[in-house]
Length: 131
Image (cartoon, rainbow, N blue to C red; front, side):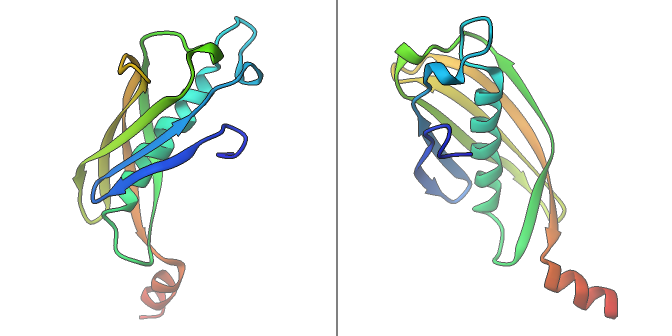
């Protein structure tokens, strides 16, 4: 999916991840703007992987829910966009993060938040179920 969207991981540190991508006309919706699913995929990836930076090896996570606010349209002629995800809380079973998608000039295209469920690896779950 990231290849189809021209996404590139450009920054990752504890609790923070950033991707860039260059939307193309093939990503347009019938209304002539970049489809909202492009925005959703970028922000879900950035926010979710920001959570992953806080987890120990072998610990998994998945998105339980996310909310996006689309505040301006996106067009192919606008060039690269940047999605940033930042962890707000990372507990034992639940993590939350927020994100924003911006133009090269720093104008906000969309912003949102996510809640992720944290779970043990399949190996850890098997060991726990046998106990």
